[in-house]
Amino acid sequence: MFNMSESSYSNNNKAAPLSGWSTVETSLASSSPPHQRSLHTAATSNHYCYIFGGYDGTSRVNDFYAYNFLTKTWSQIHPSNPTFPVVGGNNNGTGTPPSPRDRHVSIVHDNTFYVFGGFDGTSRVNDFYAFDLSSYHNASSPSTNNANSCQYWRKIRPSQHNTPPSPRHSHSAVVYKDCMYIFGGYDGSYRSDFQSFNFRTRRWNVVQPQHQNNNSTTATAAASTTSTGGRPPRARYRATCVVIKQYMILYGGHDGTRHLNDVHVFDFEHVCWSSLLINPPHPTSSSSSSSTSRSMDVVTMPIPRDSHVAVVWNDTMFVFGGSTGSAMNDLYELKLEGLSGGSGTSLAVAATGGTAASSSSHGRRQVEEEDVYMNDDIGHHQVIDLEETHGSTTITDLGIDDDDGVVLGISTPLVARWRQIKTSPTAMAGHRFCHVGVVYDDAMFVFGGYDGSNRLNDFIKFDFAIDDLTCDIPQSTLLSDLRSFLNDDTFSDITFLVEGQP
Image (cartoon, rainbow, N blue to C red; front, top):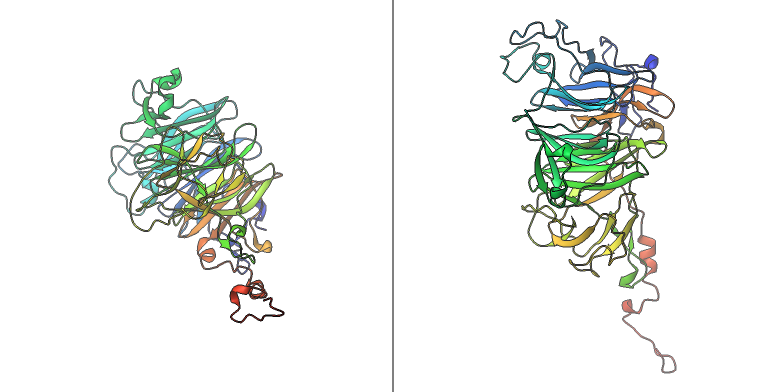
C-alpha cells in the first residue's frame, strides 16, 4: 500500500512488478512536501505540479506548493520570496493571497494559476484570484513581462455590469481555448448551471439550454447568455470534468440524495450537451448454434461515486478513487470512440430538444450492428440490440428509464468503453477521496486525500505506459468450440441409413 503519513514520507520508489503504481521519487535535498490534506486543488504548467489550499483536518489552508518533475523537489511558493525574482519591476512581488479555503477549483491558463470559489470555513465564496507563474518558470532566464501578468496574487474582477457565479463550493472547472468553464457545485442548493469566464474580455457568460432561455433567473440575467442544444446534466456537486479535443466529459458526483454514475458530453464547438453510449467490450462466442444466443462480455462500470479524480491521457479519461459511501482505490479507463467524425450514419444519443454533436474525418468505427449499453445516472444499464431497433426508436420504447429525456437518433455518435485497470493487490494505491490528480509525462500523479480515517500527504503515480504494454488474455474457448462439432449434422459429409432412417 502507498498510504504514508507525513512523518513517514520517504524517498522509497520501489514498485511491485507488473503494477503501474509507485511512490513518486523526491530528492533528499527537497524541502518538506505539503502536509497532509484533502479537498485541495492541483494543476500543471511546464514541468511543475502546483497544489493550493485544502483542509488539513484542523483548519483550511492557503499555502501554495510546487513540485518540479525534473529536479524531483518540492518548494513552497511565497510571493515575496526572493528565490522567485520579480520580472518587470513590479514592486516587491507581494500580494494578498486567497483566503484559506477548500472545495475550490484551480486551473492554469496562459502561464497563470487561477483559483475560484470554495469554502473558507465560515461561508461559501465566489472570489477569483490569479498568480502569474512566469517568474517561477523562468527564474534562471527572466523575460520581459506582459501587461496581463503579475508576480503576486491578484484578485480578478469581472467587467462592469457582469455577474460572476453565485458563491459555491465543490464545483468543477476546465479550460478550453480562452475560457474557463464552471459546472455545478453547491451554493445552498445543488447546482446544474454552466458558466464560462473569458480571459480576454474578462466577462462571465451563462451557457444554458435553449428551452431555459425564457426562464432566466435574476442572478443570471446580468451576465451574458449563450444558448445550447441538448439537456444539461442534473444538479450535482463533487463531479469531475475533463477536456478531450473539443469535448468536455462530465462524470459522476452527488445530487444530494445519491451518488451518480452518468457520463455527459459538452461539445464546445457545436455548443451542445449529449449523453454517451456505453459499448460492451467484446462479443464472445456461444456454444449454441442459434444466432439469438449470443453472449456478451460483462460491462465493468465504476460504482456511482463522488470526490474522485479524472484525468486525460492519450485522448482517454481515467477515473481513480472517490467515495461511494466508502473510500475507493479502483482505477477505470473510459475510452471514447468516434471523436474525429466520419462518413456514414451511426447510432447516437442526443438530449431531447437538441442533437448530438457532429464532426467529420476518417476512421470512425460503425456501431449499427452491435449491442450497445446505455447508462443512466446511477449506473444501471441495459443492452440495446441495434439489429432490432431503428434511429427513431425512443429509450422508453426500449424499456429504459427516460428520466433524462434521452432519445436515440441517427447522427454522429460518441461511443465509449469502460475498462477497469487491475494491478497487483500488493502494489495498489491506498483508498481515498477528495484527493487531486494530474498528468505529466505519461503518468498520473496523485497527492493526498482522505481515506475515511486520516488525511494523507503521500505522492504516488500510475504509469500509463506500463498498462499500455499489457493486454487482457481472454479465457480459452478451444474446448467448447471443439465440443460444438460433435453431433452437429452441418459438419457431416456421410449419412448412414439404418432401416431407412438417417
